[in-house]
Structures are given as C-alpha cells and as structure tokens.
Length: 138
Image: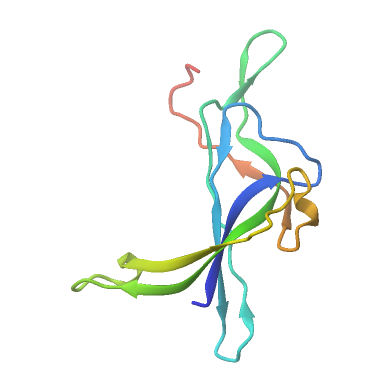
C-alpha cells in the first residue's frame, strides 16, 4: 500500500448540515498502485450514527424515516504513510497490527472554504438507509 488519506466527511454543495442527533465518522482512503503502475480506485468508508430515527412533525408525532438524504464531501487533512504490517504468530494479514507514520498539512483548509481545498472531493447527494429498532416506542 502506497499511503492512506485521512479526513472528515463535511457538508457538500448545498451546505446542509446533518440533522440533530446524527453524526459521521472520519474516513480513510487507501492509495494503491496496480502492477502496471496505475492508481487503483479506493472506497471512502464512513459510519453514519444517530440517536433518533424520526422527525417531530407539527402535531408532535414521531415519524419514522427509513432513508436519509446525505449531501457530503471528503476533506483529507492527514496522510498516513510508511505502513508496515506487524504479524504475531499465525494471525491473518487483515487482522495484523499496522504500524504507520502520519503527516499533517501545515496550512489546513480554511473554515467553511473546504471546497477550494485541492484534495476535497464531493461525494454528491445519495440516500442512506437507516437501521430501525425493533420496538416502535420511539
């Protein structure tokens, strides 16, 4: 593995923030080259978590939404490099500890101007399924 980019999932083109009660984790993006020397596409993986699954309507009732629309972008702020797999015994490579070094950009992106940052990439708008609890007593 060449390196990984590490950064935040930030509001996208519309600038809408997440509804109250929801949060996104930071994400790592692996940067690898193929045997021919071309960059392989990686996947940005992050978790959306929330403490509420509905929205209060005008009548005060809780309505359950099975999906939530996200308009977000990826804003890398660190580079993880010199990645080395340290294996102890018979463990699989996926389970082994990975030692690495980190670089942080000296001049970070300006607050609310992340879309001008050279490494920023919009992830566009997409629906995210929400896992609903078995109990309907919200």
